[in-house]
Length: 72
Image (cartoon, rainbow, N blue to C red; front, side, top):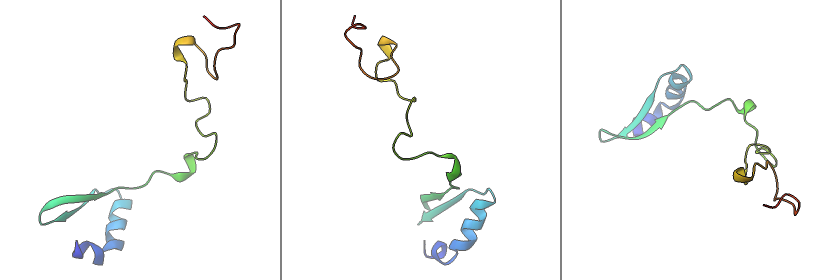
């Protein structure tokens, strides 16, 4: 771990170039460094899951509760 701390910039460059980097403590893996996904393509915040979750799949509804006229 001490060696990894002193070589953080080199480890980050290795990950950016596609290498898998594992940090070990006494010969056992304790962490893995992986590249982050492109943040530009990830939507977050209010409404980011709109249209992706169906709470009532058995009724065939995409949104909300069934109205009285749709009740089974």
